[in-house]
Amino acid sequence: MAKKSVKSKNSGAKAEAEQVGDPEEAKFGETTDSEEIDKAFEEAMKGEAMGDEVAENEEDDVDIDVTATIEASGGHVDVDGLTVKDIPGVGPSVAKKLIDSGFKNIRAIATLPPRTLMQESGIGDKTAEKIVKAAQELCKMEFTTADVVFEKRKNLGRIVMSSNALNEMLGGGVETGAITELVGEFRTGKTQIAHQCCINVQLPVDQGGLGGRALYVDSEGTFRPERLAKMAMAKGMDVKEALKNVIYARAYNSEHQINIMRQARKIIETQNVKLVVIDSLISHFRGEYFGLGSLGPRQQLLNMHLHQIMQLCDTYMIAAIVTNQVQAKPDVFFGNPIVPAGGNIIAHGSTYRVYLRKGKGDTRVAKVIDAPGLPESEAVFKITDKGIEDAET
Ligand SMILES: Nc1ncnc2c1ncn2[C@@H]1O[C@H](COP(=O)(O)OP(=O)(O)OP(=O)(O)O)[C@@H](O)[C@H]1O
Ligand SMILES: [Mg+2]
Image (cartoon, rainbow, N blue to C red; front, side, top):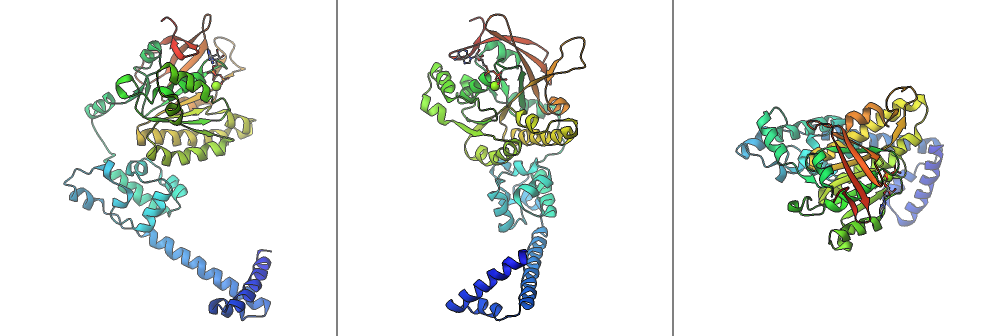
């Protein structure tokens, strides 16, 4: 079938080649017998395939000697100043493939599984392995001591949440380098908190922001720029500027959502993005994969998606807020049958887990239900026209 269409294409090419007098095409077109044309086509395809193989092998032969770079720097490699081009042995074609697919930053490569680097950039598997290993060596991603980690954690950026109670509960606000999950029933304030953080991340550091932009991935169609405008106005910000600083993408299905996160890397690198919001993380996955039989593939994909997000948080030291729905567990007879959706995958994948529920009157109650180093505690807040506020002001 494919051959047939190629044949007719070739005969067309022959006529055209004869007209314009292209010697190469005319030579190929000299064969009149259809079997010969087929043979010639197969030969030509073989040649092309072999060419590909050679190119791939050449690429796989990249010779990476990281020691040279470390020695040249006197042992103090400026990783932030390095790009993939600076890895010795990485030629221009491999470097171009990496840069074109968004991998400029060495830290981004160092924290990626080689298989993902291979899939996303189109380089060979052996090359991917070598490059990831070299990037890890350059970033000195091996052992360290607790005091060094302590110093690093002291300098972690945080985004305030416009409520002292919420900030206190989360140890100062939404942490960078981590995934904060907001989980709760409908109308408990997940989307409102996410919107508020898109405004607050823009504040200067001394006012509790990160002086950066937000990237909002909306899977439920509940993103409201007019709500952002009100929140920005309440903070005395230039509203137009504030809206420009929120980069928006609507995710139409789970695969699209995963793809958006792939593309997010380039945007984060170049657009000063400090916060990524995914509202909601799970709704497409829940909608598309239902029934016991599809639970495995769904959880696998969700796990991969969470790893994508975490890798971006780690690499660029940005914050991520994901929202999650709840589900009723039919087998719970005592206690609360309402549990976060997504099972263990989301429970383990998110760093901070905040459970939201409705409180007295128009208040909302947030509770930290899983957080490394934070006690389980509650905070009461309210949602007003200005955004998120303390319940008692
Ligand atoms: N302008 C406003 N003034 C006061 N309260 C508001 C305003 N806009 C929204 N709210 C409050 O926020 C609630 C909706 O919260 P939000 O959209 O964050 O819920 P959610 O947890 O994301 O729910 P879902 O699971 O349905 O997405 C509304 O029910 C309302 O109480
Ligand atoms: Mg919502």
